[in-house]
Amino acid sequence: MRSPVDVWQGCSGNWQPAFIRENLLPLGHAAWRGYLAQGRGMVACEVVAAVASVDWSRDVVQYQTRYIPAVAVPNYLEARGLKAESVDRLMETVQTYAPDCDVLIALGGHGPFEIDWLRNLAIAPPDCYRQVCDRWDEFNLEPESNGRRNDAER
Image (cartoon, rainbow, N blue to C red; front, side):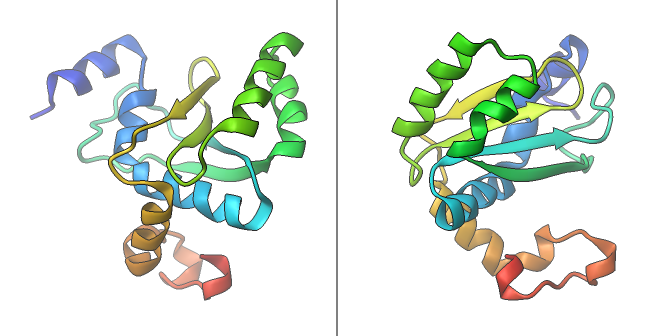
């Protein structure tokens, strides 16, 4: 049975909170991995599958993530139509968020482009990273990899 939140989000088109809830570990993993490799920045997440009829508790929603380092964030945001004053405000956030506690995420794909600042998370990004690495076979769904990647790809 779907929870009322899942039903409401499915009807309203406001799918982002359910998506974040169901994918917090891999999103936090991407944020921490990106931060360790490239410094401050944000996770860009493009949802591939249509989300209108998703049962968030059962369905796997295909998406692609990449980490946008701080230096590339303005170009990324401007390419998505954000005005310069909004980009400036968001860059202040990129420079001040706490990478070990927070995640900045840009969600796109179906519906309006959305940027979220996830704070006070139940599982911090370093813990998301560790959990995903420890349970890699559960998260790596790429068929060509046979469920394995080398440690450098994690």
